[in-house]
Image (cartoon, rainbow, N blue to C red; front, top):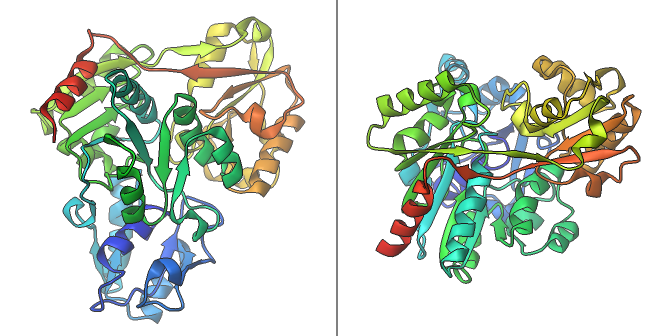
Length: 433
């Protein structure tokens, strides 16, 4: 059971070359247009000359019964503990084992030191922390390579291994908006980024040009690589989620360093609650506080105006956030009204608003395909407003060629109590692997 990332990796690590098992199917959720395809034989290996079908998760019970499935392996992230157990109950009721594969079985060993940056929820600011750490390492004369959680939403064979050293590499790859949101800020900061479906191959290639590898995990997933230093990022805007979402709590319990981010915009009591939860389940973790100050270009252009706010898609959808950096920046800039895109939503975006009613009048930047990217552009253009606030990690103005006036929101990481994270990275580099 997966969402086109962890599921493929778990298969590759635990089942691809294991003749004692027969994998009948993957099921897909969270990401549109994944189901109905085939995990190709070039990736599935010699035991699966016809590849493996990818079916909608809605067919799970039918598949268990049709193929007399004995084991179901849950392999995706950023879902509540209750959600996981509902899926487990379905499988158990049909007689199948329900499995969660452990990190020791699914982590790749590396010849280079590995720093993992994971989170307890998507949208916590993990990639900002990754950029901050990469900058520290570059300042020390090291060559860090960032390995991103795979997002194989297009051709799976072509997505076996991807290397991005420039924005031109992104353009040649025809990346989805979600991929661009993860890769573009890192590339713009001078980082080389690797990703792909076959992570053993990804690691081999990345090791050849890196001094240190940084794992930048997707959602709140566990690392695919065996870390030498584990960092987890927590979001006080969703205090309590660090103990109630899978596998975010596992990341928290494993971490050597726990970074409470966004302390500049979160309520003080929420920050204290997160800190108390860290000390409850992982008292050995070093707690570090960071801010994510928001910058809004040409803020005067939206003062007193009606704006449409476009936020990061995953943060708002399965991340569950009712707002993001765009709302905070627009409110600070003195906008008078937030335009409502729902009556003007095109195509699949109408279903997104139905599935996630908490979105209200915020527009998530959904773009898992060329068609969905066009629907996003059409929705923005059709929504009556004076200006568009772009609060996505990738600059949508470049991607969508918008006709409307727009302003961009960006944010970076700042430490708020000395340079404790910087010092921790320097100590880690000094001790070697």
